[in-house]
Length: 203
Image (cartoon, rainbow, N blue to C red; front, side, top):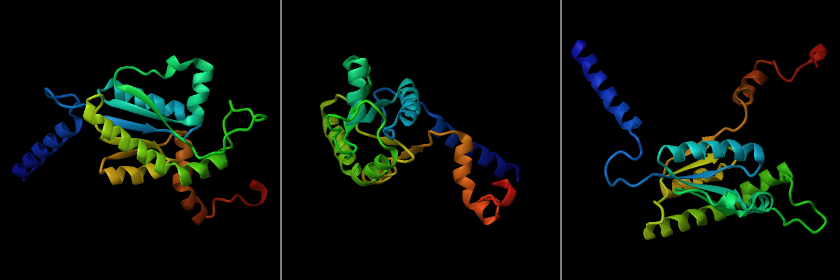
């Protein structure tokens, strides 16, 4: 039994070392390249940007993808320099599929969320796929590495299809609170147990 335990311990240690190895370990090893895709609303962009900065600090090349609408808002309010990025961190854009604001509509506000959800799901896969292709094609110049993983907002689920096409790992980021996640995770259980919807005096 003890030899088996020792074998399992060595096997676990090897797997742990492989999993925790730093991205830049080893001379001449190319940086991993993470493409980060938030849902185009402020409450989703900010936490994704935090994740992107953490990845960059740990040796990743990062491409952060904004919608063209939000990109234009940032340039107008904070100047083009804010989107200049830093070595190994760049910004890119894709269209969100929403109609362009007319002259009498304020184009510096969060867009209609239900319409934006529908539009991103129906129209953004094509532009996102083209962006990934452009990034990989341009990698041959040595300006940046090829795309090695995708981090997308949970609501931008079409990014999973793009990741599978490239055969790269993908991660989905939940940007809301832990409590809200638990609500979504267990709402079916609450319904099955008759806890919700609330009835009678609990209403």
